[in-house]
Structures are given as structure tokens and as C-alpha cells.
Length: 156
Image 1 (cartoon, rainbow, N blue to C red):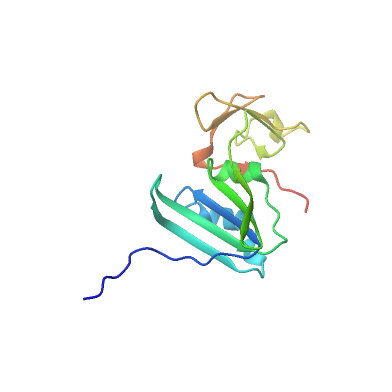
Image 2: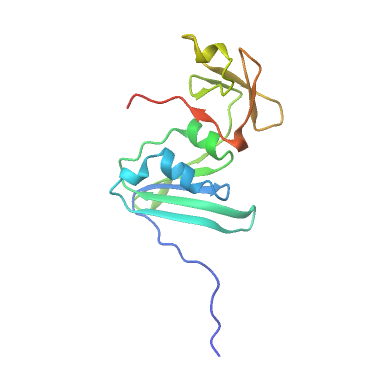
């Protein structure tokens, strides 16, 4: 009787990016945030697979040289994910996505009463110690990254 391997083989890419160690279930959020539905590139979405270090994880692979990625925004979607930049089938750069201590002008305060939602001022958030959460400089509203953030729309 033949033994069947339970290992999943995923094709490598020649040029592009690999976002690995994404929290399970967040791969499609990253897919949408990067607007990959409009891309003609080859895209591999691997969701909820076994991870020896984290239990479960998602992976997103995007073939192509034209992928624009904002590391901070990716970290705000899935802190502690990693991003590999691939050239000629080799990893040329590996970036560990981490949350910064301060964020300016990237996310909106969800508190409808916050002054940043009515007046022209820069949204500023400070990271809470030992947590994946931020507090608004103006109204002290706490945002838990795990619950999602509201990005300020870019003009591109």
C-alpha cells in the first residue's frame, strides 16, 4: 500500500512578493486592501494551513514586478506577518512587519465625536505598551488592531 504525503506543495514564484505568517482568515483582507482583484498577475491565496510555529496561518503570493506594498498598512492588518521580496526565484529582502510606536495620517479614529472627524487635523495614534492597540491623541479612543482599523483613503 502506498503512503500518501500530507504535505502541501506550493509552487514558487520567479519575481514578486510572498506575505507569510498572516493571521488565519486575514489573507483576503490583505488581498482586497492591495486591490489584487484588479491585477492580471498570478496570485496564490493559501488560507488556514498548518504552521509549526503558529498553529495556523495564511500565505499570499503575488507574481510580478509592479506590486506596491505599504509595510505599515500590512502590519496594521496582520501584525507579525513577514514579507519576502523575490527576484529570480531568490529572496532578496525579508521584512518582518511590526507595529510602530506612533502612527500619523494613516488610520481614522472611529470615534464619531473625535475632532479629527470634523476638523482638518492629522490623525495621530500612540501604541499602548505590550498590546496591539493604539490610543487617539485627541480623544483617547482605543483601537484594537485585531478588530480592524479604518484606513484614510489614499489619492492614487
